[in-house]
Length: 65
Image 1 (cartoon, rainbow, N blue to C red):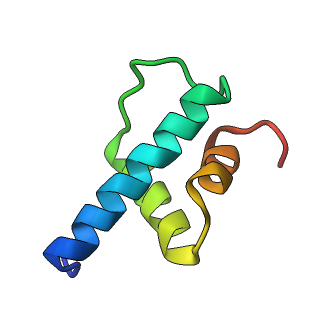
Image 2: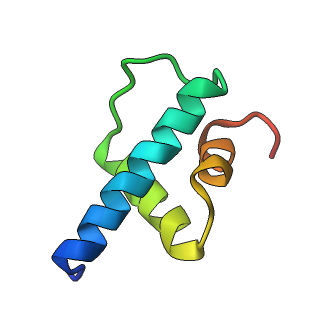
């Protein structure tokens, strides 16, 4: 993630926040949930793959795999 520009970091931050909010709204996590460094890496991968925040929430926390 060190190779991201400031604007790319801001977009990733907002996207990650949206993914965590989507997971909480869907009842997949219970706030206050704090992501680990590993979780940030996984979410960054989902972002890079083009998933939406809702899709990432399901992929990371959902029970349907």
